[in-house]
Image (cartoon, rainbow, N blue to C red; front, side):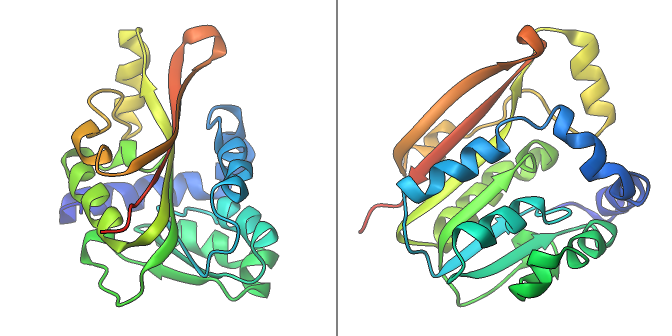
Length: 208
């Protein structure tokens, strides 16, 4: 997904931020719990669940409580973030499969009933469409793709600051690609009285 330079930058970034990620990100990564809580209404008994850009494993920890019979896989570029994830009790108890890899290089025969991306798509730059294309391919028929992420901001200084933190705030979603899914939810919400907007999307892969 990222070139070697990009991977190195992300590794350096998360080497600093991994230790404080869970303590700080609750203040602006909105919609994650809301999105996760909505999943049982869309799919009750998934067998295989994948999170792309799983970070410190907070979302996977929540998902293990909701779907105790499922198998879980988390993939991330950052070894520092995965080390934090591996220390979480739910991750250990449910033997979550944590993989350090570029998702575009991740090959498996497994098909997933849920694929979840939480505030990771905005960090994928020009590879966003390839990632979504592969995610849709990796879904089982009837499976659900869930995305929660930043969407936009009217403030140039804020977009510049987010870009400094490797987050892209424009041209995020490939609507043509997502139109290949049956939309279950698409919502756009304000954060901090409109400083930025974030979105929640759920789409289902229709049988061929």
